[in-house]
Length: 237
Image 1 (cartoon, rainbow, N blue to C red):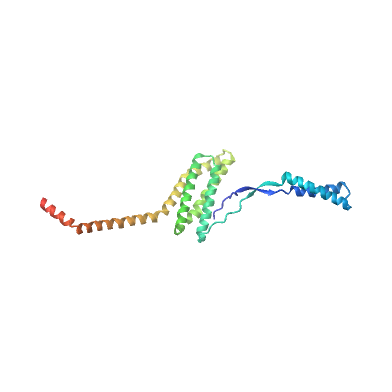
Image 2: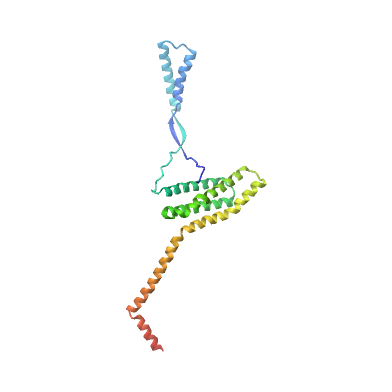
């Protein structure tokens, strides 16, 4: 299973403030504590005062801007649950790479992550276009991708620690040394997805070359080019 730290996207909206209501209610409480409130005129007076307070506070702060998370977008289904899961996990993985890349200062590691993002996007696009390739990336999705993210998360946390101790330095160095192999592994995964397509291209080329040779020979026979060539060769001899 792939687990990621998901970031919420927020938007700012305007909503009616609750301050006028609290102010009006507070007027009743304050009056009851300071003045008698047991006759009808008293209630009428407080009602008028609270109404004025409500009107003033509503004019001052009738609406306020609040930040709320965007409602989750409904993801379109392809009709294939395994493909839908791959698309969802793939998008989350790329988002997590971007988040980690923003927090990592090392230029070489950052460039490697950029390359991993690009390769991952192309891998997922290939499988989405041809779901029959899904079995080819199961190990990639279940092991290589989540392990890569875990290493990058560790590297980001090591940088954030701001300590140059021997253990952290060695761990960071090992991750840096492994990144080239990880990038090569992602490139190999993408190349493997094109293997069938490359075989089809080679097969098509062989068939076309055979047909071209056959059609060329047939045309020579139809127009007597073969006989003319033989006769010309005899005359030259």
